[in-house]
Structure formats: structure tokens, C-alpha cells
Amino acid sequence: MAEVFNWQINRSMTYPYEEARPQRQAAAVFDTNKCIGCQTCTMACKTCWTSGHGQEYMLWNNVETKPWGSYPLAWDVRELQLLGPQSWDGGTYTGQTIFEAAPQGERNVAWKPTEMDYAYPNRGEDETNVSLTGKRYHLKFPHDMWFFYLPRICNHCTYPACLQACPRQSIYKRPEDGIVLVDEERCRGYRVCFEACPYKKIFYNHTTKVSEKCVMCFPAVEQGIQPRCMRNCIGKIRSFGYLSRPEEAREDNPIDFLVHVRKVGKPLYPQFGLEPNVYYIPPIHVSSNAFLTMLFGPGTRGAIEAYRAAMHGEDRELLAALLLAVSTDRIITRFELVGDRVDAWAENGDQVVSMPLRVPTVERAPFDPELDVYRYNFT
Ligand code: SF4
Ligand code: SF4
Image (tube, rainbow, N blue to C red; front, side, top):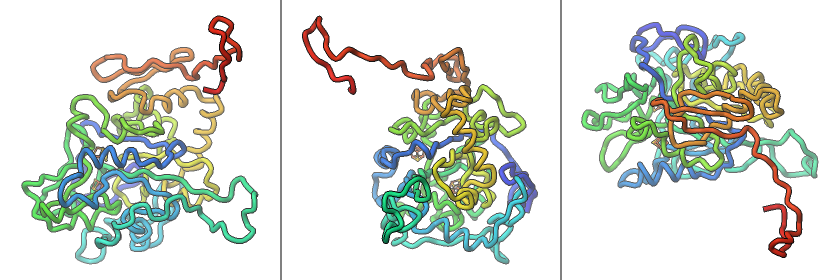
């Protein structure tokens, strides 16, 4: 076992391989406040990558409703139960990661879903944190009752549990961009990766007898184009790009800015210890700090306050970075706030975005004498 540093838990931890960070890490930030649960991302991925035989049950991208939704069934509750008590001292995780809590002779805390666990991917959809029965909620809001949508793909982890579990070294992390892939020629379908991934984002194909997972749309990414589920996001919740290590963060890189500078993007279950590379802006309407801290780690409240400040116009730079989400198909590597506009550039220097922070409001007179028509003003 090697000692590696995991900045998300602010300490070293044990992992079977030495720390080998890629030249740069492909990463995404999802804004849960904007997700409408439309599943367009789910279908964008499904129709592109998993419409073949043996892939019927697979959703490399899924959107589940928290607190009750899950795919596969209760994936996180089961993992959290197996992991045991989790505690934080400020920003440092003082509990055990899934590697450190591994039973004797095992490599990490793991469990294997059954076929039926994948049968109802929308179970718990739109169910709130409390029951609406009785007189408790007779028009009495806000804001004790809540739910929110959690879109999920493979996290292309810095310390992938799938990779370390594979006895044939069939899973690898690309040095050029940190994307985690399965070499299907090498894979013999032992399914230990499927058991090991705590996020349950690697799947077994019963027809081809090999494991498959989200490929971060690498053919597009190699051309400077964002992954399909990101480009098709109707709610424009998804920012995609490259994340630096905290000590190398660049203020003009939107992903660095959201994760390291303003710290509004938080990892999902950082206590697992995988250093996942998909980040979430926590939902601002959820009243339970304990629940959000369990999901996104400490600092969640600070992220919510920073996000609120941007929405109230008190942090225009953050607002600018947030507005870039799904504003172009190209991968943005640099942005700048110029007056009331945000400009952004792709890696080759092309300017790919220039837009106002606020769309101007135009008020029209109800009657247009030139055309002799009445117009409604609300379209
Ligand atoms: S989320 Fe799971 S499948 Fe994806 S890299 Fe991490 S451990 Fe592997
Ligand atoms: S990045 Fe590509 S492969 Fe991965 S979930 Fe999104 S659409 Fe599917």
C-alpha cells in the first residue's frame, strides 16, 4: 500500500498504487439549483453509447431525486453503512476511507448490486424529505420540505476504486486528461470493479462479458468539444473543463474558479476517499446542513452563501463563471469579466463566448400603429 495525498479530505491516505496525477484532469461542475430532472442528459448518453445488446439496464448518466432516489437501489446508503462512522475536524476527514476500512484480505469496502437493484432507476422521484400526509403541510412553506435532483456520471476519480480492484489491470487512467477507461480486450469480466466502485458507475455487460463505463466522451474531448450529456443539458447546469491541483489553481480557468477559488463546487461523498472529479453546487433551499455535509463534505454552507451572493449581484465574477455553463459546445479554458459582459476562450485561442451578464429587458407598447396590431408583452 502507498501513502497518497487526497486534497478533498485534506490528508494522506492509503491506496494500492503510488500517486500518479495526470497532466491535467478532465472535470465537471453540476449546479443542482438549476437541474430540472428532465433526463435529457440521460437520454443523450443512452442514445449515443448504450443502445446495444447487454446495455439495456445501463445508465452511464442518471438523474436521481435526493433524499430518496438512487440508481442502483440505495447505492449510497449501503456504502455509507458498510463504511461505518464518518467524522470531520474542520476540513480534515478523521474517519476511514473505503480503502482504509477494507476488511482483512480485501482492497476496499464493497458490495455487489443484483439485477433488481437496477430495475427502477426513477424510484423516489420527486419525493420530498418528509411525508405530505396529515395536517403538517397545509400551505405552510418555506422551507422545511425539500427535494433536489442529483445528476450522476462516472467521476473519473483521481484514486479510482474500480482501477485498483481489477486483477488484470484492464482499467487505466489516461495521463493526458485523467479520463478512466476500460480496456475491453484485456477485461475478462470478473466484475470486481463493479463491486468496488462505491458510486456504482461501472457496469457489467452480460452479452459481451466485459465491464463498461462512462468514457467522458473522449473522442469529442480530444477535439476540444464537451461531452454529449453536458452539451445537451437543457437546464444549463453543467460546466466542463480541466481542473488543476489546488496549489496550481488559475483564477481565469472557470473550473478552477468554481472549485478552488470561490469553492462553490463540492465533491460527492469525499469521505469515500476517491477524490472524484465531478463537483456539485449544493442546493440552497435544503434546510438540513447535516444531510448536505454527508453528501458534499464540510464547506457546504460557505458554498451556499457564495452562490447566494452571486445571485444577488454581489459577486459578478462568480455569476460570470456560472453563466458559462452550456454556453458553447467548445471546452472553455479561459474566461474574463469585461464590464457587463463575460468573454471566454477555447484552448486554441478562439473566442467562443461573449455575452451579457444580464439580458436586456425590452418593454413594448401593447399597440403597434405601424402594423395596426395589438401585441402581448409576455412572449
Ligand atoms: S466513479 Fe467508479 S467507475 Fe468511475 S472512476 Fe470512480 S471508481 Fe471508477
Ligand atoms: S460524459 Fe459521455 S459517456 Fe459519460 S455520461 Fe456523459 S454522455 Fe455518457
